[in-house]
Length: 287
Ligand code: GUN
Image (tube, rainbow, N blue to C red; front, side, top):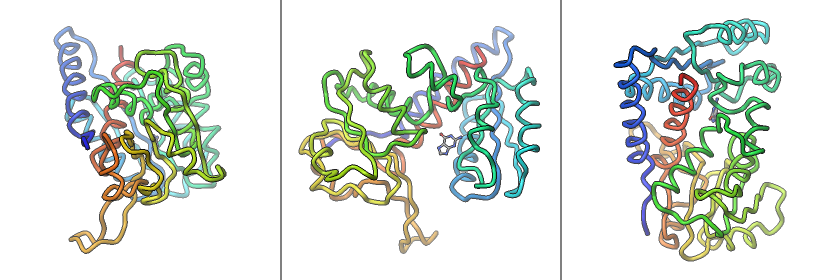
């Protein structure tokens, strides 16, 4: 069993991004600038945004965190979105999800300038991705493709089974993995919470990607011997550690890993690649 080390791979991607930012600076070009909007105090969102800001600092990218209270109004956010759209210093920005339920997430995401939509969540970018046209790709699916490519996981003609149909991960990943491209070209099955007898499908997977949001959901009896398993989940579970918790994924790692030819750990698998892809999108937006 090979561990697919996303932390190490993301570090290499970030080195490449840092080198290009330094090259651009030497040519007198502006420093790319990423802005993150964070509404409320969701602990996971706080952690993710802090990690994104830290990664920007590491590669020499400018970053700004804009914080709003949990009861912020749609008007306040619209005003900020409009300002960011017309601010030439801002190359890209993200609205950290989930938003509090009183806010119209789809309307707000649809107001982001598609050129600055480095999360790839705007319908214009989603549509271009669907058609295989150049667009900002959502960071987690893009990070997974990069991880598979850099770890030389054969994809062409293989069966990729995805568990979870979110707009952020499962659905765009199904589109990207089925593309006629050297980095994809899979036969794809997209499973979800209403799939009956899920195991029938997961057992067929050469590449199994799990983004269902349930801790340790995938057990060894659901995985084919020799499969490649990509775990997108991140959950805090109580544990006798200093913090009182530890992180686990959607896959029962300890018991599933021995069956796999390769598997991503949690933490240190997909998460760091998501951040690296966001930085890459921001650099591309600046270009
Ligand atoms: N929440 C969970 N994943 C993401 C992501 O990739 N981008 C944003 N903006 N919010 C998220």
